[in-house]
Image 1 (cartoon, rainbow over the protein chains, first blue to last red):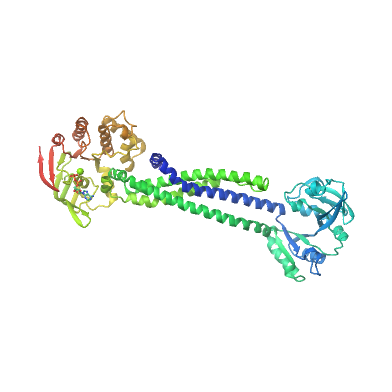
Image 2: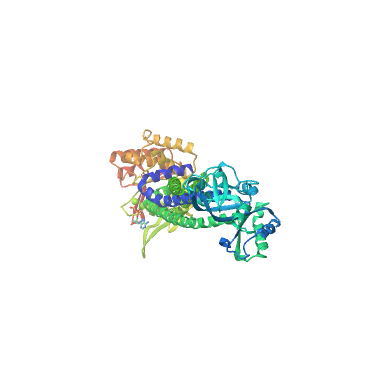
Amino acid sequence: MIEYLELTIKNLTFRKMRTFLTLLGIIIGITAIVALVSIGEGMTKAVNDQFDKIGADKIFVASMMSGGGGTGQSLTDADVRLVERIPGVKFVTPIYTLVAGSEFKGEEKALPITGVPAKAAEQTFSDARAFRLMEGRWISQGDRKKATIGFKVHDDFYRVKVNVGDKILIQGNEVEVVGIFADTGDNDMNQRAFMDFDYLREIMGKGDEITEMVVRVDDISQAEAVSIRIKEALEKNHDTQSFVVLTSQELVKQITDSFKVIQVVFGGIAAVSLIVGGVGIANTMIMNVLERTKEIGIMKATGAKSIHVLRMIVVESGIIGIIGGGIGVLMGYVISLGINRAAEQYLGPNVLTTAVTMELALFALTFSFVVGIISGVYPAYRAAKLDPVVALRS
Amino acid sequence: MSLLKLEDVCKAYQMGKVVVPVLKNINLEIERGEYVSIMGPSGSGKSTLMNLVGALDRPTEGRVLLKGKDISRLPDDRLATIRQRMVGFVFQQFNLIPRLTAMENVELPMWFAGVPKKERIKRARDLLVQVGLGDRLTHKPTELSGGQMQRVAIARALANRPEIILADEPTGNLDSKSGEEIAKILSGLNDEGKTIIIVTHSPELARMAKRIISLRDGEIVDDRVS
Ligand SMILES: Nc1ncnc2c1ncn2[C@@H]1O[C@H](COP(=O)(O)OP(=O)(O)O)[C@@H](O)[C@H]1O
Ligand SMILES: [Mg+2]
């Protein structure tokens, strides 16, 4: 085998330009594959990060009766108690989300507010990485007229910065800021205040209505089954159109599905260029064989069997494949780095981080070697069955 | 038993629709250690005969017996094995592989025969020294003169220690001085016991052989021992 390599390298360096042209197809194919997979891995990681942010053991139930226009169809405290009794449910946190009139230092603005029971607020959101405190604390047990605010609310929502200890007027009621979240990178979360659920409903006059509930399950693997049970239970009192039940997985799946399209497109490009590359190798090898007819005749006259000739040509095209693959891996790596840079610039840091792993590089090399070998089979077969007498006369 | 025996050998080539007979009813016996030269005008079938004797080709009719074994209907790879072990070819155009060094060209037949690397290198070096190219081991063919190339080719023909050396116009492309050197090497090999069959137009070279066979239009017209 080593000897075949020696011979092959001599053959290839003898025809540098053609070797290079032959390599192009494989290079493009492998570059596309490496770039694609590295982006795919980056996306998967981004999705997993998203998953971590949400928390995997959650089920979200949201009322679809928007803007308080409910006619008894809206989810209520009774539904919370119903869901709490469902097997597999650890606990339920009711949530009321709305946009309320606010005033700070004389400036009036509509502020999105999430009402969550003060004693359960931290527990509900703490494992979700989106909410890291920059200053102060979460609202907690007994914090009726208190709020923890998003980064933008503190920073530039009002003309004057809001700090811990400041008081904002919500629907005319003084509410004290006890904590500020760090920047989550997500404007919806940054521009939001978290207040006690009961107090918020009270000042807004919302009775026993809720807009959402966050359900935590005992066992993550049972989330799907529990979500079905929740759906069935709620359907007894509500129109199926009036609420949605989503597990964390389902939420994440919506994201990954959109990535699949991109992957299919990239995969198609890679496949086409690999086929083109393979045909290119086959073509070059056929030309090589034609050009080397005499040489093959000489080899046969000096005792080469068909298998020797066959192996020589196949190994040669395999080597072309692996060299193309090597260059392709390098170029794919460069593209992957470029995409990282671009993503950092346009999407922000750590949103999409592509990665070319060792496994990916090895896979690409093996794959290009195999493509090379397959492309060499036909030319090798032609070379092997050359009649030595005819070949020598050429 | 003769080393080589041809019985009623015919060889014809299909040229389009016509069949062109090249060798007609050749009967020939060659013993171990003989030095035979084959003469005849161009196109008389000398190379074709060499190819049959060297297991490179099969006759259309008749039998070719090598050490009493009929090789005239063997499959390609069996013929290849016979070429590996029994015969060494030397050609008019030298037929070296251009990008391989002298050493590597000599190693090639051993490589096909599966001779281990160490042994291969030792033998290749010894053979090149024997033909007077001990100082040209790593030269490429383009860096050698015609005579030197032909000596590499002889070393290559000897690589697997064959009993028979087949040289088809080995001096045809050489000046007379180089030609004489090649002739000397071939006689030396015959003295060591190799059977040598040589095709040549040169009367001097032919005279070194103990037996001269003349071919005309695919037939043996003369076969004499000097
Ligand atoms: N492979 C072949 N196909 C067709 N004709 C051939 C082939 N090989 C040899 N011939 C013909 O056979 C004849 C004898 O050829 P060859 O044995 O090479 O002659 P020599 O070596 O005596 O000059 C020539 O007429 C040549 O054209
Ligand atoms: Mg001839």
